[in-house]
Structures are given as C-alpha cells and as structure tokens.
Length: 132
Length: 132
Length: 278
Image (cartoon, rainbow over the protein chains, first blue to last red):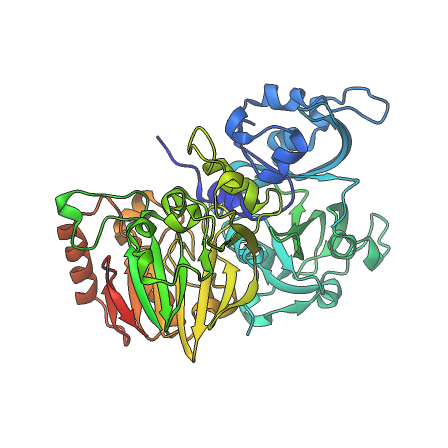
C-alpha cells in the first residue's frame, strides 16, 4: 500500500494542529482527510465518513449562493484548485450534515512538491460568523 | 529565546517541501520565513535576509494593479489576514528581482492553533502565467 | 529528584520472553521528590505502581502527553482513580474543538471500557494544558505542543534546580534527520534546552524510519541524539522501544549506533523498573 506523499503528510499534520476547518484531497479530488474543526462545521466525523470521492463530497454539502441557487462545481474552490492547479477562493452557503445552513469563505491551495509534482490540494473553510 | 509555535514550525516544514512560493508571517507582520520558491521569485535568499518586516517586502516587490497603480497596503491579502484574522485573496502585479513585472495570485491564510490563539499567517503566491 | 521508568515500550505492550530486558509495558514514568510524586503518562506501566508506597490521603496528579492508546490504556486500571476518598487530577493537551473531558470519555466509556469517566469513584478533576507553566508541589512543569499526530505535549519538569524533559513521542523533523539551523524552528527545543535528563522517543532504526515510517510521529536514534546534542542535554535516555524489536535487536541497534557516533553526553536505553537520580 503506497503511502501518501510527504507534502500530503505534512499538510495533514499541519491541519491537525489548526483550529480552522481543513480538507485535504488527492489529485483526483478524493477527500483524504478533514480535521476536527471541519468535523464540527460539517456535523460528521471523518472516522465515520472516511475518504470520499469528489462527486460525493462536492455535492453532499449542497453548496449554494445567497439565493439558494446551487453553485456550479467549478466554482467550488477545492474543485477549481484540483482542475486548474491554482489557488481559488469563494464565499457560499452550505448545509452541514446535521442540517445547519452555514455561510463559509473557502480558500483552496494546490499542493505541489519540490519536484513539481501536483499531489493534491488543501482547502480551509471559514464560518464567516465565527471570530478569532 | 522562545521557540516558534508548533503550527508555525509545521507550516515551515510544509513550505520547505512545496514548489509554490510561501511566506510565513507572525502576528506583528514580520516575515519569519520564505521558501526557496519564494526566494526565486523575489531574488532574495532567506539565509541572507533573515526575518524581514513586511514593509521591506512591499518595497522590494512594489505591488500594483492592472493599471500600474500601487496597491494600498491594507488591500494586500497578507495584511488583511494579519489584521482581521481571515483568509484573503487577490491578484496583482509585482516586480520580481530581475525587474520584470509578474502577475500573481496571492492567498493568505490565518494560522490559528489548537489553543485557539492566532499565531501568524501563511501567504502563498502564484505566478499566473506559470503552469504546473 | 528521582525518576522511575514504569513503562518504556511504545505502541502496544509486549509480554514475550524476548522483550523482558527493556520491559514490555507502555509509557509511564514517576517523579519522586521526598514524599511528593508526579505521574506522567498512563500506559500499562501505571498498573504496576505500588500505590501503598504513598500516603493514600495525598492528592495524585497524572500528566498525559497525549491520548494515543499506549499512553492512556492503563488509566482505567489505575487503583487511585477508584478510591472515592482520593483526590486525583488529570492533566492533558488542550484541543480547540473537543475538550479533554470529551476525548477521555471516548476511551473511558462503553464499548471500550465499562465505566464512564463521570462514574469513576474518585471523580477526577480534568485540566487542559497547552503552552503552559504550572506548579504541583515541589515540581514546576512547563508544557508545549511538539510534532506528533494529534495534540501532543512535551514536558519539562524542574525541582530544586534539577530538570527532566520528557518527550516520549516526537518526530521533530518529518522526513529528514537534519534539524533546522535556527533553534527557534525546532519542535521541543525550549523544553529540552540544557535539561539534566532527556527521555525521548527513539523507536526506529534510521533505515526503518526512512523506508517506511515517515510521518508516523516517531524518531530514530539518530535524530533523537541530534536533537539532544542541539539542546545540550546532560543525559539522554532512549525511550519508546518498538514492540517489534526484541531485546537482542534493540541491544544491537544501540551498540551499532554508539559505535558510529560520538556524543559528549551519556546515552542509554530505557529499562523498565530503572530508577534514575537526577
């Protein structure tokens, strides 16, 4: 069983240390990990959902604009980041797994190692109502 | 001599592995670290400059909009992030070390650790013309 | 200050005849100064502590570096916790999302354990630590997060001018055994700087680490010693022995390592039951 790239390992360890919700996906968009603050935002634990393919996680939160219109998947920063291998940023509404409607600011960054290899992407979500 | 927080240490360990220019700043706006990819873009070496106040970075890079007008400091994503503790994103032009103008996409992410303390920010910038 | 190593084995306890020399219980150490005691980590090593040596009316403090199973699996069998007349305090790492109480409850509750935390007779007081400094009797304890999966603390304990640093699970640099030149960038540096005794993770052989254990949160003897040298420790104890390494292999690893290195401070392998006077 091949291990994850060192950059993904480090991304996860960093995500583990942060109090900000973080998702990590592989180059195909499969969700590899989300941290404890992301669990709280989404209302589901990673140990329960496990890894998820992109088609599943990108729609299961029902991302919408302020009017409730579903936003196209390529406007979801993490999807855009995987596709274009560039950072992306957007604000939208999601339904967490436990039915709450949350306005989030999402920022996604591609993970590109020293050898120039694209190994995945990391997204940080920010509940716009929360304060630090 | 107080060491850096674990979140800053892990951020650097990750930045060291990435082929994307990354800056790490403390809450006061001092650049604690920038990685080799950032060194290449800026034409400076971290081992030579050491910790830099952010004003020096703006002085070297002279960020401007599409019309050549200087970007106000308060609109820089890293400044926004450090001031308001939220992610920020902007595209603008900078002057690279060889005097050429480069259009970059800059993303800044706040680093908030497990103890819920704001300990700094990570800035990543992306040459928009460059392909991975 | 005296340190007693009640459990020195990482990951899981071993009880095979081949693992008796260095011990098979998972991490637990005890600090003793006069009549005062402090317990750090509650691996299976805590089960073997002779609680009759202590004044049972005295408050008991247990510090936890983190909540991986090998460091807490003895907690549910720690006799003082089940004494309704005993005052027990449990200290552990703060995590922004879930309280320490909630996280301990995940282990001390069915189906993993028949008694829930709130029903434990001593009604332990739960405290959270981050980058903290506290005083417990004659001991001054400094804690800080270090690099290891999940919220994990290292501890520096001072008592009458002597210091012990305990970092049983630690991977200061992930994927390399070269530390950053600047000390401020080294995980755990402040905790270990010029400490009299460092008890530190040394689970793997170097090749073993490079080939398949990067990111697992543990060190090899090489990086452990480099960390000790950089922090100018007085004495180093290799801790958290891998359960897959029997006594023969562990001894050989150590001898090979010592043959190829030349550090100015004494280095030894942790032995369960060992008492070290600082």
